[in-house]
Image 1 (cartoon, rainbow, N blue to C red):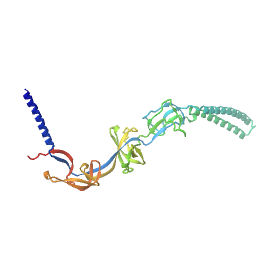
Image 2 (cartoon, one colour; image 1 turned 90 degrees about the vertical axis):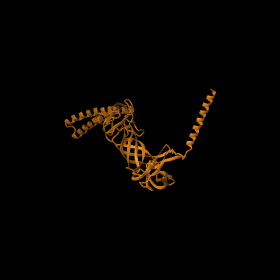
Image 3 (cartoon, rainbow, N blue to C red; image 1 turned 90 degrees about the horizontal axis):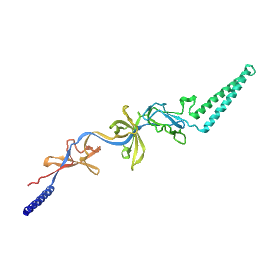
Image 4 (cartoon, one colour; image 1 turned 180 degrees about the horizontal axis):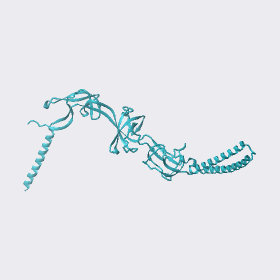
Length: 372
């Protein structure tokens, strides 16, 4: 039994040894190198770049109050369309006690002056009826009475403005009613009923009641690297893609290139703006991320080859033209003059014809059987 076990073990060892020897022998055999083959083709080549940015309205207007107070009512919400002059919110005035006291004092004084003027008028009227005073003197007293009445109306209006922010005489132009200054869409209403608001003055910007923009006039804003900005010019066409809208595409026209660079992640970049041609049906929202594709250079109807078939050596470029077939096949290294490249294909200006076949990169390797 032991004898059979020794024989089995020896057979296994022999098989392992023979298998290892065969594997190493196969690996040591020379390989045949096989290459892709290309024929120059005629077509268009364009070099493009992708600029990341966002879509936003050309003009966003911040609506601010003309008087300080507390928001008492809000009539609109973000997303609503408004016309110029349409009321968005209402402000309740919190009067300044010093101004209120002064306005009340002015009203009391005007009332006393009116009583005195009415008494003087009745006295002069009786004297005029008795022809004891001249008509000129009577008209002066009458005019003074009218002036005092107007002063009382003005004082009462001033008191209403201080206490309520609006008077009877200018109710339609009340500064407590916050109106949109342009027609458009309300992008944001950052205040709520009960919030205190202040008017814009020399010392502060005032409280923004709402932000309104014309969503029919949009621009693309992005940044481009300094290595590519030199190829841009105003009025160049662009293609805008908005990924959030199922890759919706729009045309755009470059209208602004910043004259000054800004540093971003260690690189100098220049801001650009492009006017976007938006379909009125599209539901575009302010701040959508977008990509702009712009053609930096292009060559039409030129001969080209895959760039992988080109050998770059210093300032020169070479290809390997295939000569012959089968065992007589040869690769002739030939200098060519290249042009524009899109990263995949490259323009061939001279050195090969459309009838030549050019060697490409190696694709597979097969074993070569040695002669017995």
